[in-house]
Length: 357
Image (tube, rainbow, N blue to C red; front, side, top):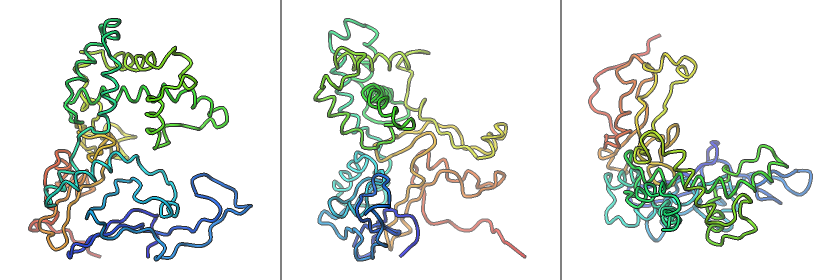
């Protein structure tokens, strides 16, 4: 038992057994799901804590793999015990699952490759939607749309630092999301000014369903039909990203540049050169295994096989020392940026730090 906040925990042993459960205390909820705040003045309350035997768990599943990726792991009554704590959309977990199942032999290099997978599978249907939106009539009516079409048509399907198509398709989805949900958000903010629909992590499902059905009663009132809304989203991408050299210059790395700042340099910017990590373009993004943003992402990458620790791999942003004058202040950071296969275990000791009274 542990008193830490409830988190996924996945374990393995050297006999090959694997398991998943929740680490940390879990309340036994009565009369409510935990998804929304409710008053305890009525029937809703906590009836103590779940006992270890009541915890949801998965042990040695038939397909031989377990994945989490901050997404939902179980369903039904087991999910009801956990509740909806804002788990992530399942796209990243699905991509990890498919790569795991496809492995004939899982070694450290293969598992690191999964963590570094920056294929934009989640955006494939959005790319198709954008290309279908920019049909012959749309391109004839507005020739400035042609470069957008060409760049998206020729994308490499990855969130690499030099990828232009990925950035354009992602921006197209973001524009559509904002336009489709704007009326609903404005309506709900009449009752709760702090409401923000982007905080709902499962909005992709209803958004895509609306785009497939295209009901007129849910169409943004500024547009006569759904095709007009989609074209407006495409035109907004051109307007926002088309300047300063054109769309072809808008690489993903230009936007996804690391901003890893020391707390001191945020208030004393002149210290940035000494305290901050280099502002480097990063591959990867949301909804894929290589989850990386300007200020957030995977805090570490690690592969360890019990009994074969000498083959383990470890990557971590930042450095081994918190002292900016230390030789190790940035040690290992470049390996995390580049995705290099650096060893988990230390090499021979070269320095010794002694704390003496």
